[in-house]
Amino acid sequence: MNKFKKIQAYRVGWLLPIVDFLILCPILIRMKKKTASSLQLQYHGDRKQIEQDIRHGAFFMTNHRDICMDAIWLTYLLRLRYFIRPYVGIGNNLFGKWWIEHVVRFMRAFVVIRNGCFRDQVTNAKLLSEYIHYLRQRRKSIWLAQREGRAKDGNDVTQPGVLKMLTIDSDNFFESIKQLNICPVCISYEYDPCDYLKAREMQLKRDKPGWKKSRKDDLLAMSIGIQGYKGRIVYRFTPSINHEIDKALAENPALLQLSKNEQIQYVCNLIDQHIHAAYEIYERGEKFDQYIDGQLAKINLSNKDEDFLRKKLYEMYDNQVKNYEKAQQN
Image (cartoon, rainbow, N blue to C red; front, side, top):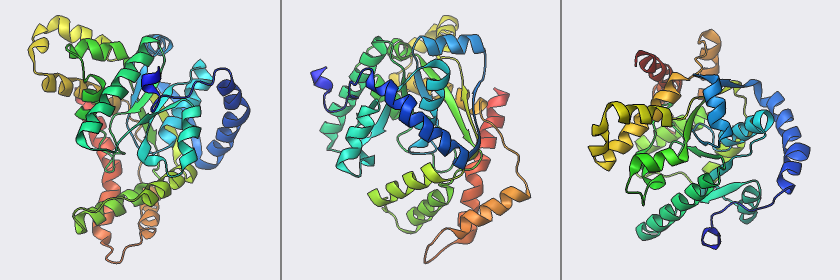
């Protein structure tokens, strides 16, 4: 375990369940009342199979909408229904203060190191991959988003780089992926309180090539994401992709002859199909148009392009519908 010292979650034993039920859960119950009209755990597919996958220890891979709350609500729901406390991957770019890293590692988070030169990035990716497989060998549940950053345009697509990291030293890609027992989970928020920040970021990147977010921008997004109103929230769990991989390999052994990049893209598409098919689609009407007007009014830019920003705000929600409809046809 010493080799994982700089990234591993702290081992706190019986203390964490006490903190969860006496401190964290009551806080989240109050937060839910203020920031959501409902919060549901649902299933897409064979519920018995999904629950069996969960109880055997799963790698929960979700779409990524909110910096903090995606993982927090997942942990809350799993804790209440299955008494499971997943290990959570958090990028070190979010540690604005020295003490934040220690708090999140105490709360069973492990560190995803995102800075350093190319050689350091490769070394850190190998270390992270080895740690994740170490946890899965011990049948620990894990959460990691399907992409490095949030989907700014609402188009949830798994980044091949995530799967490359998870199988970086493997000679057998499919076997390495199956060892993780990836169970895709679709997160649906009726409203994204950070949508106007994402639209603002898109205009800044359009107008100022090379523009990058600051740590202050991340902290603001974290704060608004935690406190902002999301309306109806649904976490929809789907079966492990192992079942489909086994079936596909049995029916088409030629998949084993594909290049690793092609195999990675095949699994990316499989994860995306699970997530897109499980979206909760919310009705849109005059109330939603008024919501968009309100979010647009919050954007403060000297050269504010309202037509562009309005288009991007609507796209964030429309892309979910397009992906859902496409998934239903497959």
